[in-house]
Length: 383
Image (tube, rainbow, N blue to C red):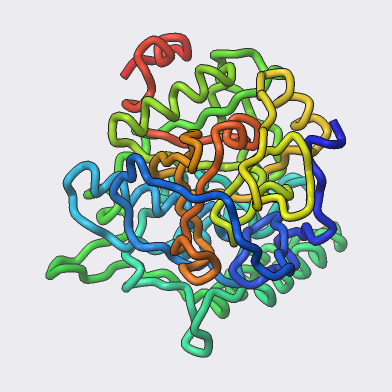
């Protein structure tokens, strides 16, 4: 198993925040770019909005899910929207802090999150356009959350150590958020109409249309389970499927015009945003991408082993938007990342091999209507 995944010494956690990199764990590529044998032809790319840049923030979960919802609006014929990624971030920070205090510190309250965090905020607070709330202060030009994350962490640690929680602790906490992100609007004008964030969201999005899926043998298949990963701080539910049916959902969604929120591991040697490719090679060699490599055959058992050993971890969320093939006609999945357009030659997109998606995906979010009817029945609801 040690040869399956070689964890790079350059893997870091999101609190260290590499520019334009992922929220939890990512590989810092410092070697000069070498010619790559991986040349791709897009087979099917579904409508998407422009690639964004999370910059120095650990908020890929919001960028990926907002991008997904923007594609859903395009698919539904509602038009092109640029929605605010920081609106869900602001309110998720508040919810995480409340949970952490109530659990006496035993809950995650950092920058990480999951796709459902965005939907939970939309349900409770709404959403606004990016032009109304960017979350970038006038003193800065990019998302830069290092100081904010440290301030919030230190504040919570301080009051937890005192063991007597002050009544006004949450107001003080919000002051940090307001100083770094700005206070979200209670109402705003958009295209000549006045909305509250909740009214705006309800005019566009039905959060009950979406479901999260995972695939691990340690949980009963076809049941709703709480996925035990640190960033599922809200203990939301996922439906658990065998990997073959899980992949069937992905393929059926894309074939029928539905994109997907992808959550998984990007800390492997075989993941190279720079080279626009992600693979799980049988052999790890120098100049890995100089030839198209043989990959592992991935089944439920291998997925479970790498999950239990931390070889597959919940690192990064992105937006799965289509399919492609390489020079020998192998199938890949096209991913829209949130690291801007200049960090690779593919304009911020990359291609994940089928083996990589089978092994390194932790979970997905998809529209319920994209799930094949036979699988939907097994997980106890129908389309």
